[in-house]
Length: 175
Image 1 (cartoon, rainbow, N blue to C red):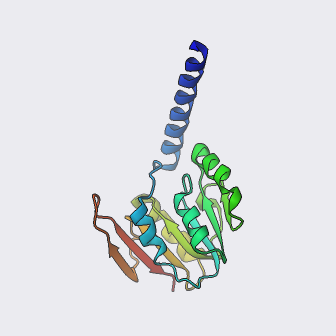
Image 2 (image 1 turned 45 degrees about the vertical axis):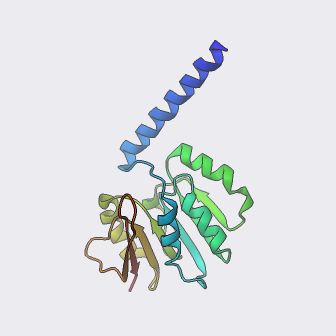
């Protein structure tokens, strides 16, 4: 029994250290999207949307799973670089044929075929993504961001949610 608890403590330490390492490298820590925020974000996607929905920084895939269920006609791709949230998402995805997770830095993937981009990141990352969105997103693509805005872009719509954190959702459409 002592060996079991020693191994359990070692596993927890490894997970915590790996998570801290990814936080430092990526500049953002994993933060789950609250259910009300997730519902409000997905409500901004037109029901007849086709193509690819991409969630940047998908974590364990909470938003991606809901998007895959709500939009079965779309390919939903969750992009996550941190190993443990990625592994959790990959294990859970097996029952949704339109849901895929990739473990990659989202600055290294192409947005050329994205219809919708979902994100809950940080101000510095949104600032960096602005150029990538301008360069790669097709005209008419929708970006839905929880909490953090795209600098110098005028949102098509903002939604203020009540609750503990008074979350704001920004909806953009690429011209």
